[in-house]
Amino acid sequence: MTAPRDIPLRKIDHVRFFVGNARQSAFFYRNAYGFEVVAYAGLETKVRNEAGYVLRQGGITFVLQSPLRPNHPEASRLILHGDGVADIALSVDDVRLAYNLAVERGAVGVVGPKALEDEHGVYEYATIRAYGDTTHTFVNRDRYHGAFAPGYVAIDPERYSPATYHPAGLLAIDHIVGNVEEGRMNERVDIYRTVLGFEQLVSFDDKDISTEYSALMSKVVQGGAGRIKFPINEPARGRRRSQIDEYVDFYGGAGVQHIALATNDIVKTVRALRANDVSFLRVPRTYYDSLLDRVGPIKEDVAELADLGILVDRDDEGYMLQIFTKPVQDRPTLFFEIIERHGSKSFGKGNFKALFEAIEREQSLRGTL
Image (cartoon, rainbow, N blue to C red):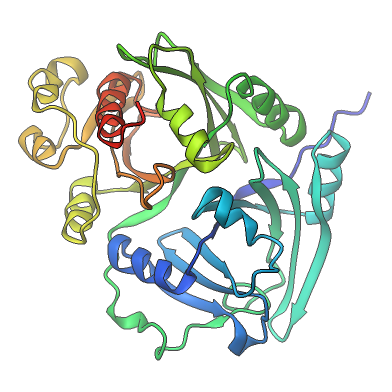
């Protein structure tokens, strides 16, 4: 019997955000997170229904899009979700093959294989549904050499001056976390496994991720030879509403909860982000009293980590450092994680209790716990 063909996944190509004002959001991510604004699409480039900005830092590409008219096909998602991630694009060897195999295996097709062409070459893409109304777009740009995609042009310094941005040392997307409704986690994990050929990397239950008041469950799937990692969370029964319940309520359904961004110097990166007024969650200072007893020797100075609020965890392969921002919009939905790995492939299991208690303190302030 012939073995099933693999979906030819390479890596995360870009993350597309749908926001209320792309120009202002680009200013925020440029000045707060150190992204360079590299390309633009809009009325001046003959794109009539939306404006878009492409931002890059290291190997990370964000695309920020806003509707220009109320009849834009996605305009209503701003009322439902507010600003958030609409699409996680995956680079593939063959768009048509990836799309056809995914649909054959049960994926919901959104946009069939298409090829856009301009003077810079051919950009190929196709889109399937992920969770909620979040999508995955298969992208191949092997034959495209423009600024980003047809309709986009290199940024005009009159709009944003590329020479004045200050990168924060962010290098790559480590993982992207999705929140789904109670009882839907296993279903979504199974779809990633059967449709895209992902493997389950690790799972956490309510005994691993719980506090006095709330709990959640999570499973991590990975594909693209380990280059693409998607933890999927769902709420578990607790005495009060969990952070996942809060997210689903304010987002209006399942969606991307946070994006983990990798750095090779988390202390330098967090100092830069704090100087740019990025707000982070804080754990109690007592977390650091027995840190070395719990994680063993690390090269970083514990006093400096405590000053910045950076968490540390260790597994059999090494240690990792991480810190989480507060939500980047008024709704308590999307936020970011900054992560530095020293061999560890874990997701910070040893930090779960301290982290989620910090989130609950924020929920209590919002009156949503």
